[in-house]
Length: 188
Image (cartoon, rainbow, N blue to C red; front, side):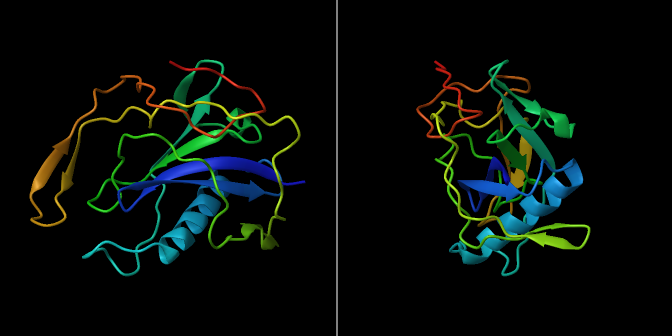
């Protein structure tokens, strides 16, 4: 039975939230490789903004998981932090095409091109599956806190400053049609 996680990241200034399946709870290296492969494939089918690199790859710089007990985003440092259908957020190194934009997480969806999970030479292509019985939507705050990050403006190449106070908690900005472990938590 697959171990499914909900993974969100910013692609071309837009948030993409995908259901990513594994044959078992992955270790952090397996998780990173599969997310990078899945999101890179997703980038291949998305319309690219003018001037974006033709062969851009998704690179995970940092992963966070939404802790539904503490009601906040926490750094993902151990595989035992993962539970089936947890919501993750993957940061990429900041650049003009993939910067963390603060806005609501979209509802999760299947990847456009599922990338088979690779572990020790074995492949896994998850079957299309519905969430388990009793699975309920959960609200999440807008994207996790960001630190001041200089990025290059796409047109001029001049540095811009995107600032969200370091350590600040995001403010809820709406409903999100995602859930974790079948629990509903009202935020805000």
